Image 1: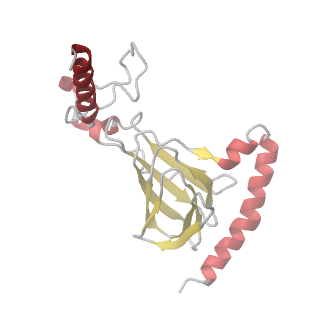
Image 2 (image 1 turned 90 degrees about the vertical axis):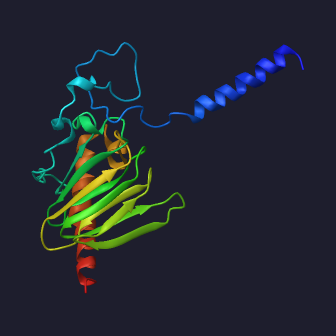
Length: 217
């Protein structure tokens, strides 16, 4: 066996070992440091110096207040990522609050980088998603229920009760991203987008809500 072949084998073994090692965090915590100057572009945020980490980095109050539902969809979604909640940095998590007024809905959208666990705190909601074979999975969930939206799948929710609904979510990425189908298609024509949104709320959303109410035991 010549030296070149031996070197190649050693290189392959070393490369595999490096790839398999340290695929998780290299320290206990890594709160976001938005003041740091990045010399290179990195996949995430720089970490604070360990000596400057405080308990406040691991607490957030952004989801205490209800969102503004005074809009065509009668809904509000507030996503908190590592940019707003320093303690989330490198942990692969983000959180969100969804508020749905009576007949409010969140239009079909997806999170390309995250699975979402949707916990209903208050109300009755019709929640669902569509998989890659165009199969619809939907369920009428009530207070205390949890519904799962798989990563990258189009999903939606609709208030099917007689009061405002509140839900909290945990997503499996510190930056889940949001792809809105209606926004992607009609973003260049605001007036057309508003007309279609208004039609969905006044017709489709109301009919779906009435159907759901009639089937609540």
